[in-house]
Amino acid sequence: MKTCVLFVSRHTPLPYLIRFIDKRLGGNYKFVTYSSRVDTAETFFRQIVKPLLNSFDKVIIIPILPLTVIQRLLEIAKETNRVEIWFQVMKEVARVSSEQEAIRLVQENPEKRVFQRYRDTIKVFELVSIKRLRDIKIILEDI
Image (cartoon, rainbow, N blue to C red):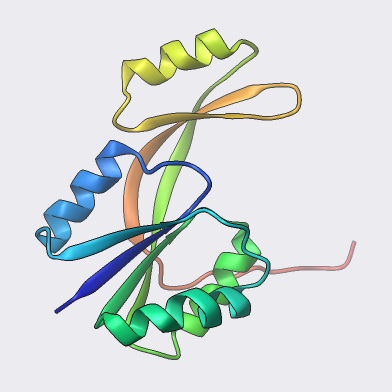
């Protein structure tokens, strides 16, 4: 079975993620990174995923996108049995004010850690696990 792993992020994948995929798929896959803007799940699926399905038996999407986009992407993916979405479960390790401190913390576990700059802080995250995404429920109520 020919499988395409589609990593959707502006960031590079963590080394642990690549090793995890190798272990799960036995090296029998093509890894593709998509780092451009994703406006809607529908457009992304139509323009990026569908063409991949012409060349591959299965597409595994690993998205780093807003949750609402991932939710809609999952709904679309459920219409075919050839697309899966894998989700990186991350935990926040620290909030720091200096990039040097963030780099130091990432270097403690570079296989699984990354930092992200925000307006007034820097957050360091660590990859905890990778899971197959089955459902997302967003429950809203009036304020």
